[in-house]
Image 1: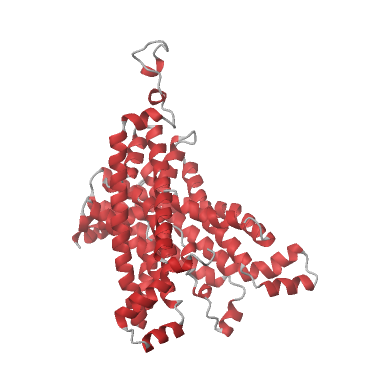
Image 2: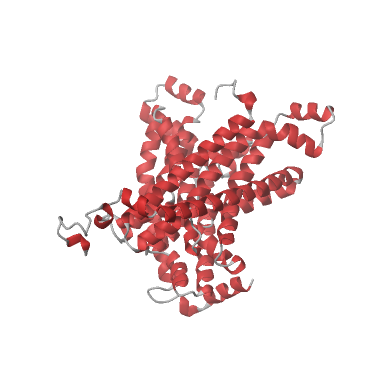
Length: 245
Length: 234
């Protein structure tokens, strides 16, 4: 237990929070980098996932991209990108984070779109809705919980991977841990690890809240007391859980 | 540097190691022992973590089924653990287990729990009630019911989870390089600090290959353990 107490002691020392390598700077870096990566991953994966799901094509690709992604070590991708022409810049880290954020969003979006009740889709078609209308007014609202589940997984994973980026001298909170290892300063290592864990848990909590808050069918679902796993926020299928970074 | 030596000079061989190529057979040939050792460490750490993780997850899943109020607590805790970044997880274990392979194994076990507990629970939950009642009527109960009826029927779901957990664990083991027990991750880390392209790429590719082989082996094991499903189209 002493190790954890020393870590907390390090964390509560105001001197460690200020300056260009202080906790505050690293925290801002971490959140900024992760935030940009999540937005970019959404910008790439959402349109593709929505479109493939709407057409009902490319399912093998959309689902397998997650499985393949799981087998590729985050650390290896970070190292390989860093050693290419990209070199050491914040954008190297961001590109790696985006690559790891795309699979869960793409897969969940596709699955969400395909799991929309076929009767509802047929009914909407019968009412004369065009493809775009169908997508926007029927499929998207019904698929929102799963899509948000994917974004939530991606976000948690990106925050975790951003920590690992420190090993290749990337930005973010992980730097506190790696520089602690460099100086064999155990309280700093533990202090850094504690703040990283806290950030991860806070982000997970916020995303869980967001997932519930943006569900357009929330009211209807609550009334029906649906037994669906999706309503509890976390996808329960093992296939939808993606590796931690 | 040899890089600038005359091309015809026989003593300064112009091979891929000197050119620092990404793909280099010479690297594999000259560092074979190095690679085998890292591979061995990687496999050992992964296998131990998965075996322990599966045993712990099985116990937790059975407890979660028997003791209703613990179910939420077990699922919630394992999910929260899964949220923690690996670098931080290994670091927090440091004061308890030191710079040893144990740190990596404990971290990987904790990660595998989310997937395995959920998978085993989902599999057991899906066993039809009438099957269970019939078995109870035939005198099966407790451990025998679990072993003879529930687990075999839950096998496909459990194996799906086991495969996901194994593939993730193979990839995550690389992060163990932070305490110098990352198997192939050690090679990636060393190659990274010396800008050795072939070392980083070879170790990375080996990681992926290892994950795919492990997945295929588990699939084979599943087919072998569930012969009654072979007649059903996969």
